[in-house]
Image (cartoon, rainbow, N blue to C red; front, side, top):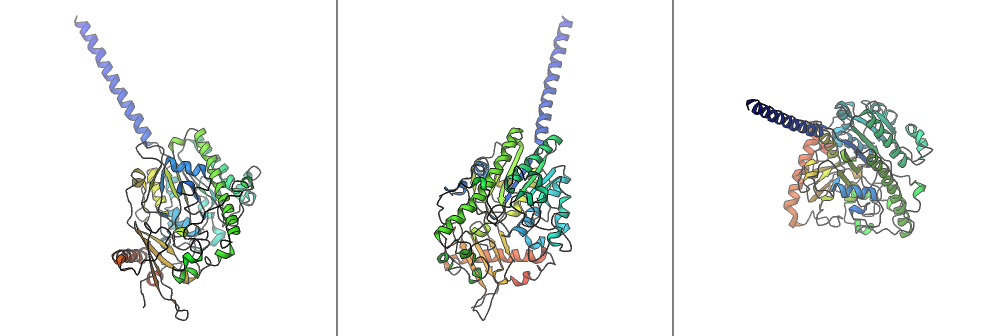
Length: 505
């Protein structure tokens, strides 16, 4: 009898030990899953307006793959570039810093090696990620303002995979040195970048390393050279005009807004006439369709490799595009169509996140940088201006910032301005004055929530004086940050004084 009880006790003990071991194995397995680094793909277009997708309310366009991302992720309705021009914006998004801390723009100079050293590709690689790049890099990294000759030379060594090209790049794949091997099968660079991305993904999977791929498309930037493969996609399609289309919708804006190239381009690029407007919009959206197709190529490969459930997707653009809004063409200026862009983020790993949702939470291009690092488990540098958007992704009503600036110090000085926004209002200060022309420093205030097309400047409306004072204070805080944190070279230091508010009657 004693032996029987001993045997039973021993068996129960072994079962308990096995059960405990099993639980520990489960915990270990769960920890391994939690510790597994997600892959990250960042799709970044050039000159893409916020209203160029079905998911953003444009029912005429055909963007199935990008709209599919919106259905699986979080769509940001108030996302802006803190500088609305490609070179500076790309430096912003690589480093998580505002322009006056990068010192980088066409008229000012290169990104310094110090700022590049804490860019997201460098930090991710240091953390064990395999990092790749394809497309238009868009800026040089140099402490001596090396210009375009230095573009990519410094940065290239910090990537495991490089399919980048200098300056504005070419839509002809064969003209981009790093992409020549894709030219025969993919003569248009937009699809070629998708093919290059697929190669990098397969290399990364084979090496069993987590990866981050940055795909910086040239499209839909001019010249207007869409992929002939999609010539029929918008044949005979008629595009609607936004409510702020045309010269009449720009007469209430500051005179300084009409003193740059954006004003003549309304006519030069054919937005002023119905026939040429429709043709311009068809070609523009054909270029975007090529991007959508390329993204679809990559998404299909992720599914084929069965890694789509652990791959975070980020989609955005380096600046917006006016397409005739306010009687303007191009970008640069801080109005909605120039500075606001799409942003969609998909995290397939967390089933607690509500997918297919939209958020009105304010975000900027510098926030993308911090978000990528946060997803990868990499500490966000304290000097970053960007904030991680993960709280917003998990709760679309959350806010990570109370304000956001838009810096414009490129082109004619008359168009230079500093803008600041909060969750509802946008304040623009135009410093430029010319006594001979009767141009004075000017303020603008817009209620973006109730007037999303900026059809009314409410700066002189007494009803909004409390909001005006609040935005002025936010503006002054931003200017103080510029003075204290901005670079002291490349011509940025004087703006801390130039942009001080001084209004004359």
